[in-house]
Amino acid sequence: ALLTKLGIATARDFILMPPEDLFPYLSKPFKDLWYELRGTAVHAIDTDTKNTYQSISRTRTFAKPTQDRNYLWAQLRENIEACFTKARRFGYSVAEVHLFLKTQQFRYASVSLRFSTPQRYPLTQLDQFENAFSGMYKKGGLYRATGCTVGKLSQGELVQGGLFENPHKRAPAIYRTIENRHDISFGTSLWLGSSHHNTTKHLRIPTLTVRV
Image 1: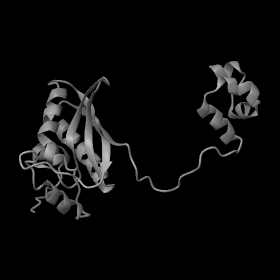
Image 2: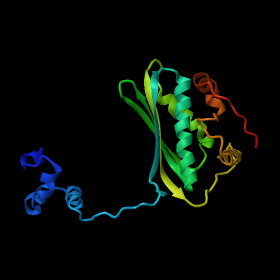
Image 3: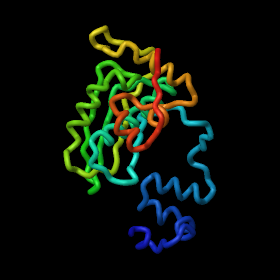
Image 4: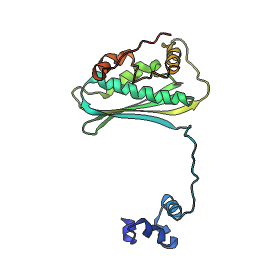
């Protein structure tokens, strides 16, 4: 609306207006844009593959909204696994997880989880994730999407808790076995037992047992 009042209707109008007339009305990003459109580089172009992250997200919308609790849980688990897999790929451990369900009416139910010890394997926190999901899910609701964001990412050696803090001692070996196989991955050819029945019922996919 402001640009219209200044007589600017096109990008050409924008770059031809003198800066002394235009800049008093613009914030820095738009001033930078003015220079860039006129051929003056302001920001360097980074052509390298992105390999540092503040957070990692994964969201999936269903082709058909569903009320099926087990199917929703399976889809949310897939998103969680995908986020943690990407975090591990770049050497990160995760200290915070944000989960959400989105209804057909575009309303959100969400919860955030924080870990005193950063985690790399979601299997070790499965009970927390399932309890969080149970708190968000409302029977009879029609849902169209689930999502996960992992944050407070840290690199370096992972400090594991004691025996009673980490009941899934074999999780690292399980994940290493899976990730050394390039023909299988969580959510496509491999599903954990907690989501196996309803996931395979919907998608009709083969199942795989991993022994470590």
